[in-house]
Length: 512
Ligand code: XMP
Image (cartoon, rainbow, N blue to C red; front, side):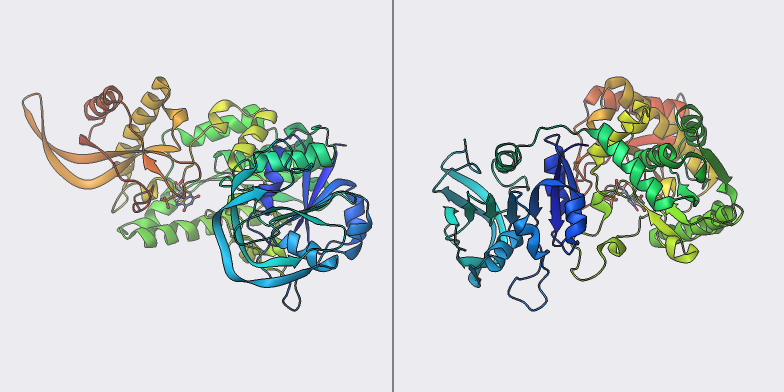
């Protein structure tokens, strides 16, 4: 068993970022709710504990508290933001509301390096977000850093190995924050860096087996990286108890259904059911051009088709989803059951309620790049792991206006050419997403001696790290020229190619 750093979650939107920063150092981290029992905490056998930040105030009635005896376990503890204030309050110091909230960047002046700031410069730019501050530190502690607004921006009790930081070392805007975390892990908790993604597979497999028991699980497979990795992982845990369902909604890219079936046949031994529902979707979408109506119809039809497939399977208890951490609601309201507060996945929103299924989400703690790493460890091929995201409503939101088979086919052919050329030139891997959009307008062209009057294909290629913001990609002229020439020459029905040079915001990545 790898050594564990326990992160007690007080509802910060950064709790999983803390856990991830620890994993990046090859140290296992487990997140537990703030109110976990002493037994649960002891069972994790932590070599160190981190108390996360959180939206509450330690001064308010009903402020979330950890089990008191965590301070008697003899393991090092690091409190971050709310976690620091908790230490202050619970160990005999005093916390007060700040006159001015400290939010954003500030200059941290380190007055004593000690173990936590060992090897760091005397001043750092750090990122804060707090409305309370410690005004009197508990006995045994000393202040080791301050900012203009906080006298005690960092504190330590070197004897008991308790540390507190008012700023957030886990966020990227905190300069050298990772070094502070590394000092806590390696110098204070004496971690050995003995964990990797292979261990994540082992612990997840064990967890899935315990959660599912002998019950059956269904999974909506889209062929994208998240659902494919979830399927491969769950398959490894419970094999035959899992059935994956792939809905062909008729809005897929060229050859996509066959590729998903091949992926399954080659790499995931479990059961796959393919629901061929293209006709049904297109019938329901006939004459609909409003983007939101399209999305609603596609979502509802998906649920109906999926529901029918599941009913034909008999008793099923769990719905597995490839929900990732960024899909999880940003701030977990304290007091509620955090597990119940996830955002429903775009593609299958509404399913669990309707079917009274329990959710199984083994990737909930991971970030996209970690899921890719996990997929690699599970033996999935590179073309699946490095696939661009594809929206649930598929080409339905990439054919602008009415959806017809003719339009979808034009789009499929153009898109396949664009993607092929991006792959050949090595650009595919540098992009967050790239695709074609079918525009329902026609323009005049000339081919040979003939006048043409055909549709426009728009190319979209963006760079991004999380799809929240995105920039249009500066693709080389020669590549754009080749793609344009091939589409106009090879795709009947398109005689003009445009390139989308809009960033997000204010535009979005998809057109609808
Ligand atoms: P926008 O267009 O909002 O998209 O900038 C951001 C990211 O989300 C994807 N997207 C979706 N994914 N179901 C999904 O699974 C959807 O309904 C959906 N709509 C947009 C989009 O492709 C981009 O990566």
